[in-house]
Amino acid sequence: MSKIIRIITGAVAFSAIIQPVGAASTFDAKAPIAYMIDLSSGAILYARDENKQIPPASMAKMMTVYVAFDQIKQGKLKLNQKITVRPDTWKKWNNQGSTMFLKPNEQVTVADLLHGIVTLSGNDASVVLAEGIAGSEAEFVNLMNVTAKKIGLNNSRFGTCNGWPDEGRTLVTAKDLGVLGQRTIYDFPKLYKEFYGLSEFKWNGISQPNRNPILGKIAGADGLKTGHTEEAGYGFAGTAEQNGRRIVMVVAGLDSFNGRVDESVRFMNWGFQAWTTKPLYKSGNMVYNVPVQLGSQGSIDAIAPRDLAVTMPKSEDGPYKLFVRYKGPIKAPIKAGDVVAHLVVKPDNGAEQSMELVASEDVNEAGFFGRLWNGFKAIFGF
Image (cartoon, rainbow, N blue to C red):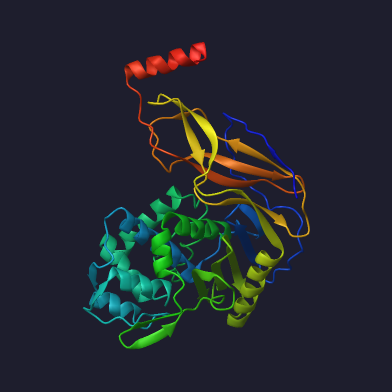
């Protein structure tokens, strides 16, 4: 059993640069672009050209779904809300690549359109949903790009809502797709479970299977999105969860449908079989008490938002150190669930693994006398 050494460091600016962790059984990726992250620890298990900008093809629809989920969470969009298929939209997308087989002037609920995008990869469903949310695809694309920046997709931009070739305007990176998959799963857990992982979906009497190449082949597989155009080749952003451990993987630039299936299954199997996790904190556990500035209270518990673990190669059992890093003191106001710190794990034979810690409760701004009292306590050490 590894010896765990807990070292807490406060008032340290957090750096999000994380390199792949140390040695495991090597993986010989056949995909020119490949990326894998273990969400339980933040450990990057594999990275090849993960920051190279590439056309995502239909993997761009992950961003469309994220924006729709966000609109639903904010109360701006309802699952039972109906959107009318514009005849011009139907005419343009009826025979363009993957389709949900919508009909002109048909009224379709947001929920059904989401199934049409997630399960069927419908280009028509994507544009109809975009128009229903923002009035036009162009306005929706603006919303995609604003949201992408907000959630940290720093090297990606979108020109369409469905990933159809657009002369190079839509470009993403494998790392950004990994972040997008992670944020979708964590930001909208109920919606994710409702819409991802269906084996098939039927609309207008036509049943079509999910194109996910690991669904039914990898235990716990339930997402995310395939993509293919002549320009982009065959790509896939996928995820699976086994025994509480979730992995997100991305492969891109493969040259055949079967090659994508084989590589995706092989890659995900390697992620689960060559690596293991050791539990650190259960969801809701207090990890560190972080000082608060100008707040109604002087500190707040930073807790684990989910079960947290360290990822290690199965062939190793070396020691590691734990750090808590934050920019501190944290300035009020703070909402319960806000990210206030990061738990960083440093294995002796590997690079850092980083996990978010969140506020356990709300902290309001202190009034004048509250700030005066807090300052008095800080000066005299009360």
